[in-house]
Amino acid sequence: MDGLLSSLSRWFNEKTSSSLYFTYIGFFIVWNWRFFQIVFLEKETLFSSPRIEYINSHLLFSIPTYSQIPGWINSVMNSVANYGWHIVPPAILTYLTIIYLPYLHHWALEKDLENRFERRRMFEIKKA
Image 1 (tube, rainbow, N blue to C red):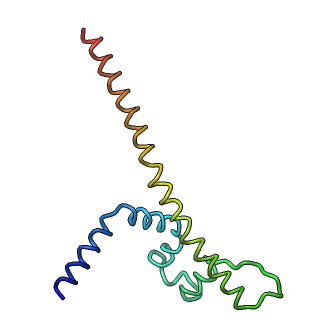
Image 2 (cartoon, rainbow, N blue to C red; image 1 turned 180 degrees about the vertical axis):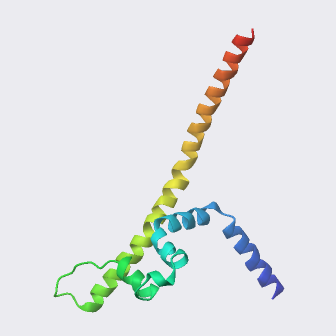
Image 3 (spheres, helix red, strand yellow; image 1 turned 90 degrees about the vertical axis):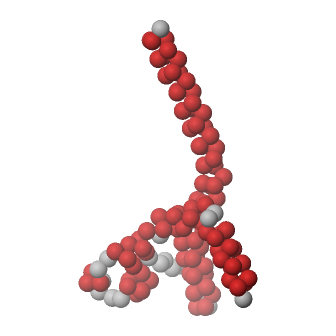
């Protein structure tokens, strides 16, 4: 049992030390900021209905469908669309950040070094 707990602890530490998870969590919070504002920051007296009903009525959307489609299919489509809208864009932003941020960092570092050596050269000219 002790080996299982240490194995789970090691696995959890490996997963949480990755920047991937925290990048996704950051983008998820920024993308869904209105939900977190309603849940954690707003006072209860501001709502005329319970928070869950307020969130359902103001933050979730429904897809207009034809009348021939059964209600359960419409419900599934709305659920997939809402969950997709709240989960997929942070995943895309995380992917783009992890792929392209190192290139941006490399470019910025090159520019910084060019400017640093140019300033040092100008300083040496003025000093001489």
